[in-house]
Length: 354
Ligand code: NAD
Ligand code: TYD
Image 1 (cartoon, rainbow, N blue to C red):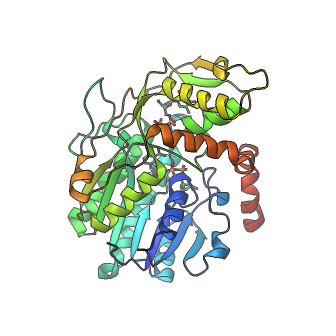
Image 2 (cartoon, protein in one colour):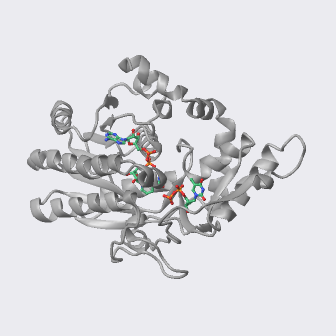
Image 3 (cartoon, protein in one colour):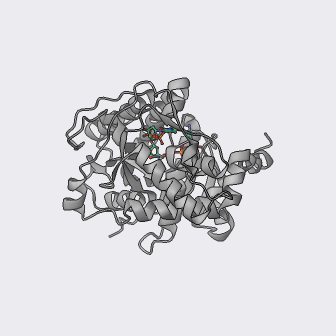
């Protein structure tokens, strides 16, 4: 089913979803091309996520440290590597950071996306596809019922979601105005290995293991629709190969959960596989804190377009996916300790002399 991409630019490939996507793609038999991973290595870019690839997959995998806000660097990379398709993950991705310091979200998410679209457009007919990875947060917040469809109006509430909405509009405009071959996916909350522990699930797992408080915003009853990261990677590859150019596809896990219920499930798994010395439940670590400003109440996705037209559906249930994820963070203490201590950035310092 592959569209025969030769040189795929993956932006943000050292982040959570981007690194999972690179592992996913290199293991697929219907991808024969080369991956050029362009990442600025911000705090969220972790070279440990792709350990060994540079030496084991020589010829099929190249890493270039560059900022997508640097237009000249993007032009050089597209030319040097003959880029014929893009999977665009690179972004500032954390809502709380966008509330404290929105500026980098505007540059990376909006200007960075513009630079990539502009560079892709200049390659003319040799360019095959620009796939933009976006979020369901562009649609705003739902009440107790209903689902986001591809027709739901955009109503972003945080600087993060507003910047992603702007990037989505640019992608749409480049297709309509310049005929750039694009596809776009708006996905719900992801979870799985290699997620930076500022996001709910890895933060709660690591804090609980370290006997630290588990901060629950507001009443803990905000709802997200959770998708295991490999299912997201599979959706992206399906859309890239079979999706109609110029179209948007919603991606979700049919797994709506209240935050407090997720934290309870995580603690139950941890209490079972890594019991505390005193044998007591870790639930006493739960700490209700002040709510996030503009906190969206509920996200839930209708992914019937992707399911009915392209045959994709999620394979992992939330219960099995969460158990796999919690076990991964428990078993990969080397990765978690290097993230928590900041040691993951040593490689960057050694390579780039910072
Ligand atoms: P992440 O924060 O884990 O990783 C982002 C990566 O982008 C990092 O490696 C970082 O170094 C890189 N980056 C940031 N700014 C850059 C720049 N200016 N130039 C080059 N590289 C830069 O994010 P993630 O969770 O993997 O999300 C990836 C994409 O998926 C984002 O576009 C995000 O909006 C989208 N998304 C995420 C989720 C989720 O639940 N995490 C859900 C839906 C959509
Ligand atoms: P998060 O993982 O930051 O993803 P997003 O804001 O993009 O959905 O947060 C998921 C949910 O968990 C959200 O409702 C906010 C809540 N949350 C907490 O209650 N405590 C925390 O420490 C964090 C990081 C999030």
